[in-house]
Image (cartoon, rainbow, N blue to C red):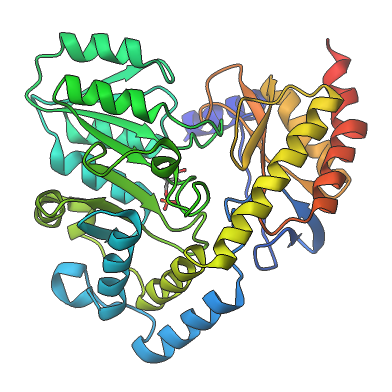
Length: 392
Ligand SMILES: *Cc1c(COP(=O)(O)O)cnc(C)c1O
């Protein structure tokens, strides 16, 4: 017990201790946290669908028709009509023959990688991949090799040296803590040259970027043939919950037979699937296109304003606009100073990001107004900038 306490104290001293906040309201640009209204710039509800009336109504109707619990795993009696329809609609949306629902993105990644790779195989991962992808590589017992962020030449060398039977390249589509898009075209070419499979987790891109909301794949012009495995999560841009893998029938059938995080868990509540179907309809409609256009305009407004202030933004074209701080203690200090003025932005620290790259992870949403982005810029000018300059 003493050891646990020492570890917690060490974290606290290093400004790495994490605390939860209790949010009293629904998600939105303005949320109520422990009784206090705040302007939030840290949600992944990029399109503002988590609290959308049509999505709420679909969930209510879904609960009325199908009840709350799915009662069992998909392979027993948990696979209900809403799940099945959602899978068909997600396959059509992404352009793949099949899609398979998982309860969370974390589980989709664990399930896909561990079902397709094992001892004797090799998994190649971008160094900045999401933790669930790295855990998936470890769980699979394949040889896990990490390559420097976005460095396709380094990956190419590793692939050339590898004698593994099966080679799987795994990348985020939009990198969750940096906001940049993976060099998918080059990754696909490299995969093809070495007979490797390419898998992309587009948790932060799907629904949100691309003219039709089809994510990083659409932005980079990749076909399902070039990207045999697509993972999408439904708790971010879709504003609901869950995840899916899109692939051909052979891969999907293999996952159904072999992916333990698919087989040994209760299916999502059917009402959640109904809510997600409503989100997907919005994403594919004119309203979805308008929400994406509004978000793009906000991102441009924010970047132009931040540039004028001389703030060091990262090279991100997406809704994730991190402000690099470096020191974890400083990042926490900035986050707290902004909180005091009513603006909520979380400080992201190691081990979520590499040592020495703590940052404020600012995220924009179609739920924000231009005036709210201006309020953020004001706060950064008068609160954050003076603190950032203190030690330079
Ligand atoms: C959030 C996230 C996940 C996990 O998805 P959940 O549905 O929240 O479990 C997986 N991959 C990436 C890149 C993510 O950002």
